Length: 119
Image 1: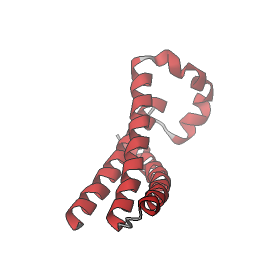
Image 2: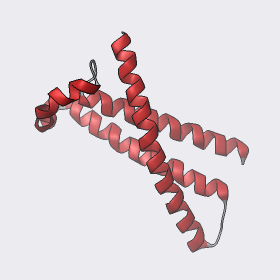
Image 3: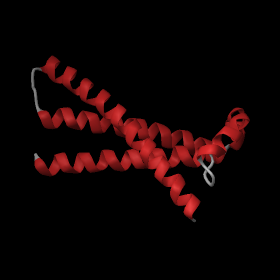
Image 4: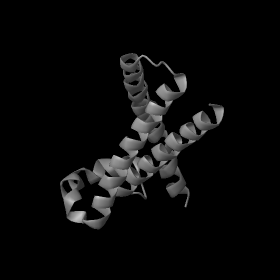
């Protein structure tokens, strides 16, 4: 059980880094769209950051769903299993992608709810 918690902690740390990257890209896209339409709203720019995070996490959930349903599609990545076991002891690749995407989706939802209630 302790190894599973450690793997989830690593997934959470990785998801924060990935979410931060997608959030920054979303903020840049939101700023560009706000400049095009000449309607600078801080809440809308932050919502764009959350939207891009949702899109990225849905893509990750889609990839993990494919790998859960058809294991043979993940076969080329089995060659790296020895390196994979250095970082994760209990989780396989599909599970790690699932948990990272799930944590990114939760972060996006939290930011969207905060912006909704502040606005």
